[in-house]
Amino acid sequence: MLLTVGELARRCGLTVRTLHHYDAIGLLQPASRSAAGYRLYARADIERLHRIQALRQLGLSLTDIGTALSGPQQPLADVVNRQIAQIDRELTEAKNLRERLVYLRAQLANGQSPDLADWLDTLELMTMYEKYFSPEELKDLPLHTDPDVLAEWSALVSAVQSAMDRGATPEDADAQILALSWMTMVGRGTGNNPAFLMRLHAMNESEPGLRERSGISRELEQFVEQAMVAGRLAIFERYLTPHDMQRMHSHYGRQMYAWPPLIAELRQAIAENLPSDDQHAQQLARRWMELFRAYAGDDPATHARIREAYAKEPELRSGSAVDDTLLDYVRQVLSGLANKSH
Image (cartoon, rainbow, N blue to C red):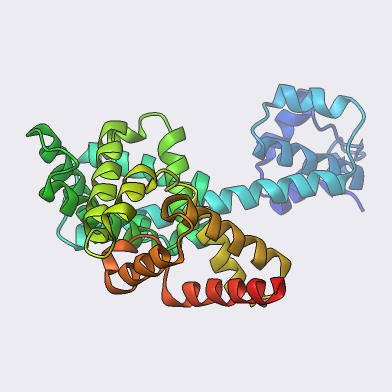
């Protein structure tokens, strides 16, 4: 079957003028001509035209396309697969853009009127989030989806910075209150997901300019960490002996960044219904006790007092994603290990 230039143009959505141009530059020359001199295109010409259009959509110039097609040619199926992959990328970008616009619309609906710079910063920040989180995960990340959470974070960062500017120290009561509020916001902003917390921390460490934009400088972050430790030690002091507290002051908080990945793995083990005698679950429980003993020591009486404090003081667990279900699971695994050793 042969097609005239008009028929081919109509079927492929190009103009006759474009096909004439392709012929003139030697990019797509028809297989033959009719007795009257009209261009006639065969199946091989149509396949070549598909390659040309696919390469055009991938951003190549006509000159580069001519060079690419002059050498050994890829199977048409490979060209089609590349084109499908390109379309998939464009669909993903369009979906992400739509989500950003929906987010900005929500800001406006809540009475917020960001100026152009704020809009651009928001778009840049959301693009940054997409490097660390899948689209499905972003839907479950309140810090990304809930304008109220963002506003409260901003207010809290400003409050901490103001405390630092007026010379507050981590030992001051108002600084400790801010730090404990910070931990509550950590839980709220991450949806109590420690895996999200780790990625946000990595993003804050790796992305240039993010600290300046968020206001969370290294100095502010360290101030909050120190105030949080001081605030929680003040709570523990109600339950522990002076001897207990001496060790706690030396060791509590030193491995704070070792806990979130462990808690994330334990939550995953619970979600997968790993039994208490599962080898991986037992490894996690042993790691739990290593981290616990690093600040609590080995005295069972001290352990009991610390556990009492955790049970009665919610602020000791705020932002950690440690709930009763997780603690019960760890106890079951540890109990199984204890029975196994006897």
